[in-house]
Length: 265
Image (cartoon, rainbow, N blue to C red; front, side):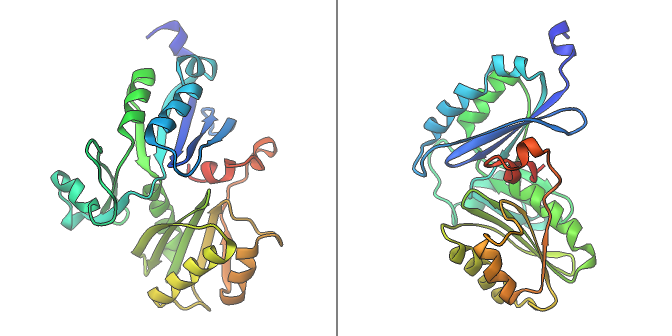
């Protein structure tokens, strides 16, 4: 191991969406040190996303930030969750072909979710993974739903009906549990507070959850403020609403995109 590498102690996390990405650098004590958020238009291609990432994450960046480890979180909606008893690693494309548009050259991956004995099957961006491997070497990558399902499962242990929602840039990641069994995981895009509230309430109705007794927890870009119109609507119908964001450094907590990335980790 080179002398230059031996002193590196920080961990880099990259959160990749269809219209951009953010990066977060943490030290060995998991304290956030640096964060930046970058957005393209909704119609951005995978090649445009790679071009943006290449301009920000490169060998010089790794050296400057003293990065030792890299993890990549994919937040794209091309995913599904398959129970372990029905899972066959050789059939990954077939699990996605009914709810995602597949194109030639797509790569497929899966994350094991031991807490619920299932697997998240998804499409990572092969061009981005290849580039990061060239720059960094081996690294970990997962889909955000994998971590959110694990968090939701832990939160549901003492609650009969529990929903965990993580809010990102115009995207809702949704997991629902009844008696510690996952009933649903999904992702919805939204544009207005009314859209947001509708998806939540409609899903609760379809699951036949008891709105008086169930608990719903929010993390990410969803705050307990008077300006949160979606919260005002939901509070009319739901009794038990909790806010799950971790305490963050004051210098970063209000930066656009920080809460939705930091609270995935």
